[in-house]
Image (cartoon, rainbow, N blue to C red; front, side, top):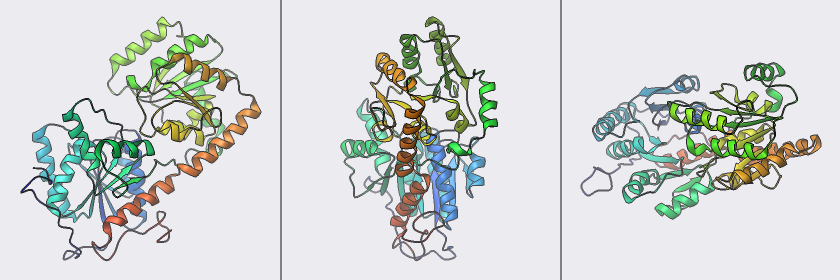
Length: 416
């Protein structure tokens, strides 16, 4: 039963500290899996911020390789099949979450995906924990049932939108406004994505692994192998560009999509680009990958909710081409300022942008790199994202009990 339905449990946001309750706030983040991606990276970053600010960070997911990163960040991981959309499994998840919240005396449940959010909201309502969400995606609205399913992400007492594009979408589709919605862009870790921190040895190692030749321009498209990431648009653009003096590297895990990988291989062969385009799978050193690239492409045919690739590449001082919709309009300054915006799904527009990027002189590249780095540092810093998220937690903690999270930057001064 949904908490908004008649007769359902209502949150009991008591201001008293339960007997034996530690003064350290307990925050539980929940997401389907800890594989790889922006949702997972944000979860790890906030886990570290909670721990550094004196809180207790719990993460519930179905598991995955990034569990270790959660634990290294100071969090505790609890494995549950919260990736499942099966109603019976979701019911069991709700009961398990309710028991966990009571046992660990969780203050705030922070849901980052739809199926887990449905379970988490009901469990929070039955236990008196506060419930909030981060709206990570531009979810499709193909029918009314889909709209209802998606709407859980706008039902938090606070809703974090990861871009202004998403904030506007939440308001128009779900009538949730500034009273509950907080726009907090994703944050880039500048200790990792810093051109000065990437050694020549790392770049050489990656170049050798990818069989890249010195002096040959490299076009990089990072993104998991799924059709909407626009790999085929880039392949068509390269065919229309007609140049043989370059290499294009598609970086991304197929995540079981072997049929799409086969389609891409066939597309490359039909376009006569087998000696130019290569698909290299996952990359564990994306900072070095950006450094060996001359231009970084995000060719998504559907709008990106944020678009971490464009922000990371600019942090490394690389020219970026993204598609002209979604949050790319926020992350990329167009018309050659920090990159270019191409018409979505249009190979001719993408080819024209590639031609401009590849024609940059050394001085023009240097000036663009300075603008790109400054833009990302000003608007998309990880420390800012963490500080603003802790501030949202603090909003929900105010009045709940005497001791809350440290305000400002993780580990910093209150009120910063």
